[in-house]
Length: 134
Image 1 (cartoon, rainbow, N blue to C red):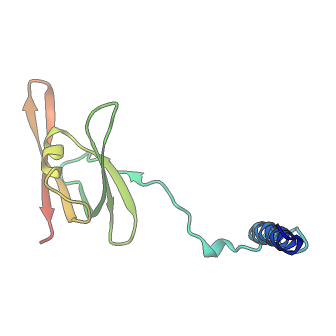
Image 2: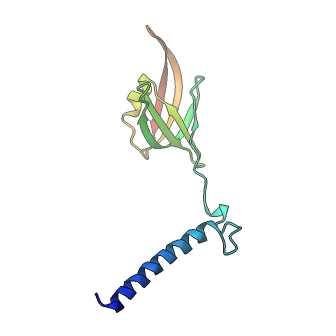
């Protein structure tokens, strides 16, 4: 390689390291090294969804279904709904609720209402009604 090419490559490598170091420092500190340059209001905090429990007949949850999963430990559905005001709520399924939720797709707007209890050999089973926006 010619000396000029080697010098050019070295300069480019130095420049890349300089830019990366400058970007890192700019993200974390200002030139004085004592203040953050980023402002907290430029970012939003990501919070875990609150857990919603259907405790009494008539309890409802309403919103857009944003996540469907399965509890590996207990083998029932775990669902997340985002309400109109942007608040996320997570709830777990039951045998009957999981069957109903199997027809619901992500992004569907739904209302779930705890409507009754049914006696079974294993104990009381909660019954739900789901309404899906057309």
